[in-house]
Image (cartoon, rainbow, N blue to C red; front, top):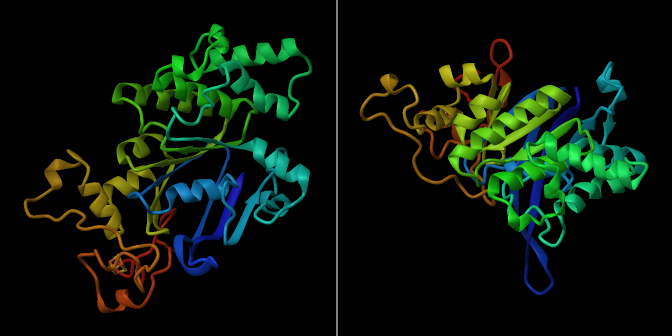
Length: 334
Ligand code: SF4
């Protein structure tokens, strides 16, 4: 195990008036729990605003969680991982946090904004290596930068150029090179292909898969695109209004979605199991409720075609169904 996320909540306060008093909260994450191991990909899927990007940023420590715990197993302590894991949400120990920031990297959705336009590609890639004092000389630094560029399918000569000289796909390759520069154990991939042309998307996904095989990195792969998620994930975590509503393997999830929200997402995919669709079958209707005032009970009850009386007051817990599968729905768990 590299990371264990335990009942993590993230509420953003809403400030109002000249005294900036807290008038309420945007409840972005509600007690999210999961584990991720070496070489594994967990896909996170859901509509925009479901909390998936916030989850990535909480794990990357861009945001502090409101409550819950995040355990991280340092390199070399994988055996007996839980006992040796460090709780990093409130950790202030410099060395642990430095290792964590080195080991957990992030790739962002927009390759146009995630690279500093004033820096050369060489400087962008050299920066993390210098901060963590990875190279002992200037020559070693330049050689490492060249190797990183080759690793992501770019020429070492590109090191002297600036981000605006590259296409979107090339910029995302540069972002990936920066993310792997410190040999991280985990990368949070936040919609890494959604700003790219369809033809380039598969190249970037193949590159990420090849690098994962080579370095045994774990990926938390965030996307709203179920086709992409299906192809990259070992496990898929479906989120709705800040809650995890289902976790399953891609095969199980696509063949037999158990949560009504997952089912609705599947039906929204063009040409997915077309022979099983029937005329008049509903797909997802309406917008999700506001995370400022989420509904009581099941968060999905305002849009669920199977809603029962108890769903309006009683929140279903994410519970195991059979082997290696979890779902939060009263239809499935009594
Ligand atoms: Fe629908 Fe009730 Fe299940 Fe929620 S708990 S998904 S409202 S059936």
